[in-house]
Length: 350
Image (tube, rainbow, N blue to C red; front, side):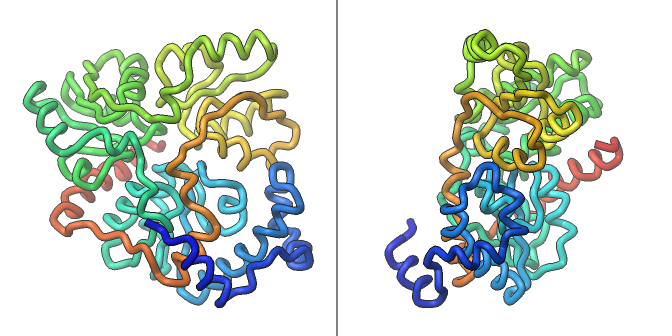
């Protein structure tokens, strides 16, 4: 649990973090990447943190991997690599720095540590968990194996190291259908996201896809009626949904894809108005690169992703906390499942 007062006192003694319009002006090139969604007053507050973090990265030989759901000042201001779970997993293997700061949730930091056991992997807040990852354990995998003997287990990367270690291969929302289709068995177990599994089952009808009944607190909140109502109120809007949404929500959308898939769709098609049926920060992070697209409508915020802040990133690099550790035996088994995903994805050209 963070002692915010202690953290802020120590940081204020080590760095000048007071709002600085002059510094903000000097860092205009960084601000331009987020100016459409971050006002100048807020940028003057963020700029000292961004400058301090970027200086510390060089000092610590560190890189920051940031998920697409990070807020714009993190995504554009301090991240060295941004992307969805698959992209971050691939890049985690390629980084040469000694320290990886994972700006995302805990399972992502575990994945980076699994792939880089000799590197220091930090997460700015250990309480940045994931409702989906917490919905299943290795015992749950064992239950599914007992129910469907011989069926391979494809587990979403949104799982703990323990669950990955008990699985045959991992997947992300961007490669789930292709990985399930590539399994040799007719029956395939998917865990833990029931909605991703149900959407994959429709895309891969040649397989009998069975699933664990977990879900994401962000995406399960959307309903098909929400989208119908919004379309009635805002005709002409392209509705783009993440496949962690229920199937009827996906049916009501114009396109469904992973976070990277959503970005590519909007970039390629440039709809006049777009509603992203996913986590709030997605639209904010791509808004400045797509000034001709009007991002409209409601979104749901992930309370776990939003635990990662500039202040906590600076504290993490300043104190080298919180280091993520994975039991070596668990990590070895989990790495097999993650590496199979990466290798198969590259083979399939995903």
